[in-house]
Image (cartoon, one colour):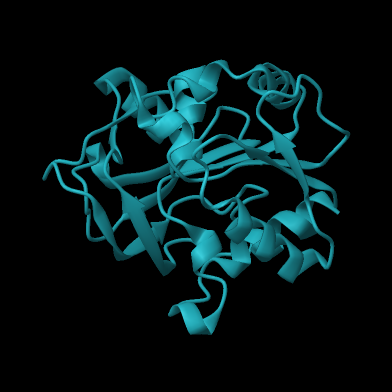
Length: 220
């Protein structure tokens, strides 16, 4: 499986995602600068966490217009797997690749701690290695992670099985406790928690490893 990680000015978790992918594949992913206009042929594209462009204007809003994102969207439209984590999730909503928006946390404070997630749909390439209803311990680190969408969009996400993860202990006020969602065809996943930081016992949890292992097996 070949993977690429998109790097923006202000990204800070690209190294963590790289390490997680190396741990499960033995192969280093390609690091692609945001100003590139082309992508090599890869099976997985990751938009990592951080503070692209310093979160100016609105989290992910400027990064969404980076040249490489046009190609990311084109690849996703053709069925390529795309994973957006934290700021990457924000970027995917800003591009329209995922519905809804990430607002400021309900408490208006940065939240950085482990939270408990519940797996909502295991019938996807991202979540097949989990069990339905399984609870995971995964860290969050964000100020604007409060997921919001209108009622009709939320109902559509529910009925289509597009909710990937919910918070058991909602840290940010996200509507319906949503922590991560898929697009309609479920080849794009965005989530606020950081599974790449739950891949080693030294970090306090290995509950993120099945996500990466499952992707590798599905895309091999």
